[in-house]
Image (tube, rainbow, N blue to C red; front, side, top):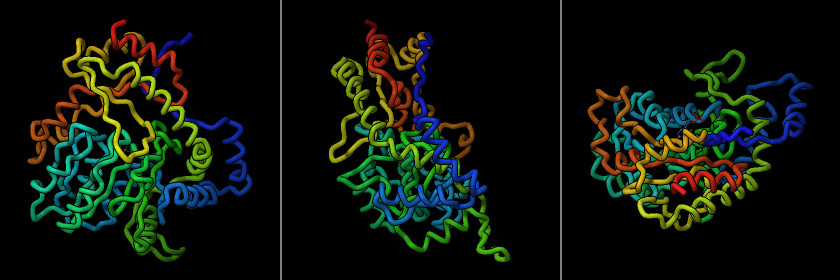
Length: 369
Ligand SMILES: *Cc1c(COP(=O)(O)O)cnc(C)c1O
């Protein structure tokens, strides 16, 4: 028997269900360019998320890059963001010709600390790009207040937050727009894929232009757009996976409950506080080792020796990447709390079909039983 446990495992429908879903594509020979599956997924997501507009993308990163581009911000403008994230967030800002200004995170849920945003605002600040880390919601109310006070745009990187609700409202609905990733490793996947969720009707045409070469008709190109379209096979995967989403989240919830039962109230092990008013999607299970008998790196190695993949997520911080070394705003020492957690956090294996015996095995190894 193979005892290896991966940190994640993609949710998939049965092969029969997927084949049934893509059968019509063989009849129509329409494989991409906003076909029927694309339309169906878009409509179903707008309904599920309770948002007026969803634009679908070939991946989450291009969705985020396009959302930031849609704001049409002045080149060289400063964007306040968090370094405690995946490379994509910071790269999307920089690839738009903007300058990332790194704000520290809070200790409770690892999202951007709104108390520290204001002191970073200058006359060059144009936007805020916060991240809902691990599916924890940012303090959307405080961020909204700051944005209004200073006239700043807000784009949420909600890659981790599909299925999360704050006070009953989905993570799609905050800021000027929110980006979801539907990558294979996320709670909901379209193999690769992503979306921008927004309310501004004027963005519908603009986003279409951006992701399809600005083509308006066979003889009319009105905008210098790129190509970031979601294809029909991705959309069909999404249609299938959306049917099973609630069930997948419920399974994840049980696994997280078992991890919490085994690892809470252990000296030196810190678990993410459960957020008030938030319905979680149980996307990740982060554990912080601080003053524990083993360091984070020791636990990582111990698990690896047993064929269990945990992930140093997020480490290193994006503000210490080699590619940002020469940026005046870079440097992990400027965000000490983010650095503290980057050095101590490990996300444990978590996917819907992880069985509880394996959760116990992982916990036994961590506890040294
Ligand atoms: C996955 C992820 C992305 C990028 O999404 P892709 O679909 O992989 O392009 C961006 N930000 C965060 C926080 C992510 O976890």
